[in-house]
Image (cartoon, rainbow, N blue to C red; front, side, top):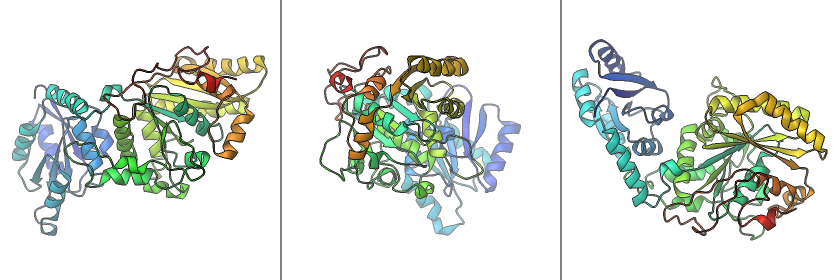
Length: 430
């Protein structure tokens, strides 16, 4: 490769890491080192090679698959004196690109790193060919809409409406809310299989390290528990209980969402209501924070009251920190009937949030929504659907995608003053 190399080094208690850092600092000009605390640190397209131990806590097949898709070479380090060779066998079974003993002199270790370092242009071309050959949505075209807002604002209902309103393709709705998972219960779906099942399906040996797409995710889609009505979108249910939040790791969920976006043309992710940084509590809210940071678009849900606006602005501050470049559209939910009050709410948001806001639509309080929730059914028409359909939704059709219903169908409309999208005008009509 040409140019300086960025070497990602996992935190390690073994002596090789310190020796490598000191040697590169004092004697090597063409290698920079970045310390990595989790797998997400090396998936931004900057790191060229990753060095990690056989006992690195976040080492897994999903993490390796994401490194491979980003064109990053992974080298595993093991201690030949420990556990009768278990570390070396573990690394080879996972499928790292190379395995080195920690006793190797630093100069020889760096020689191996240089010989394995990828050519960035070749890596990009390989990723494009892999997407095309596997009939997967190209990485640049993958769409992840993250829907969130303060507790009680109505993010669950808005995320369902967004999934319902996409025309021409069959989207996927996933509940990543680790605080109040509610998508399955709202739609009358079984709470098992769920998000943990889906992660397990791609974590083990069933996910080929050669990049072959696994079909086991289809077995993890939520199934009806009440009635037999077919939904116009697929669902991966959230946690069976909010007490299970510790079962989810942020990097595993990030890999799952990325893999879903490679297979479904649109992924709608319902976030938890809390996005604040509670790093002192290991893992708390990390799942929602990670998905929000990696989303291509954010939709915030604001309760249509003065207090609701203040709570939404607190939520939005955390969202902007996580995704400073992603556009944020807003649905003011359960807004008052008075046009003057609605204008005042929108003006408050615009005045305080400024240019960070995208489109802002206003949804009235709709009795149809309450009835549909009690019956575990979709809202078929009314003011809520009409308002959400005013968001500038854009659909992408996958390459030979099996989840596309009609690849020649019209895409959703983008006029926020119109009644909605192609194929849903009757459903969204008042």
